[in-house]
Image (cartoon, rainbow, N blue to C red; front, side, top):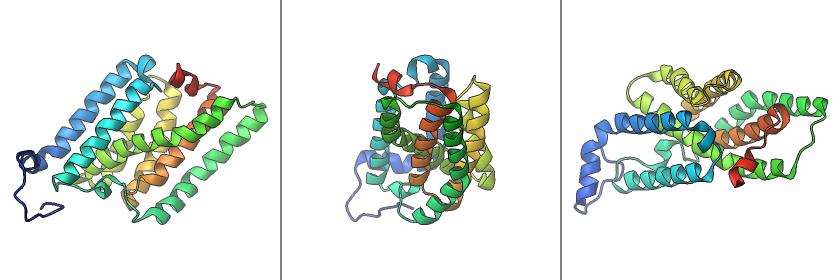
Length: 221
């Protein structure tokens, strides 16, 4: 059933999208899989590069607008919604507040000094985190659920999210655990907004306080 029934005759591209609607979950997963594979292969070149992040954000935004205009899905179907926001925020804080405090405590214990880039990253990383959560929850997990995986979509989406951080054993482990938490919260409340913010804050603290890396330097290089 179309998300936005209309009395106006649909245009040809809208009809085409509505015809493809049953296959869209597979097509979207396939496209994301190809992009993820390219990212893994060329990770050193693409990681934290605006030339990669910008087009991905643009394609995701245009696609959501396109399918919404065609009456196939709405932005809320990708987790961009107000419903469930308070509950998702509380669960996100409950699951990720502790790890965040551990990272901050470790940084203080280590005597880490924070460059100006940390604060730029802290401001911008949640946007990149939101894009990643939109992809891995709003597209991947949501489509796995549409395809009938039910709760199994949680570990599958988490595994997919972790896999793009190959070949670092630590990042595979850390993102796998975080991915389970992200996917659990999304599965319950279908809201990516607090997940994106938490992703960005945790990522910034992980890179600067624990790993001692400066992703913002690569972003502006």
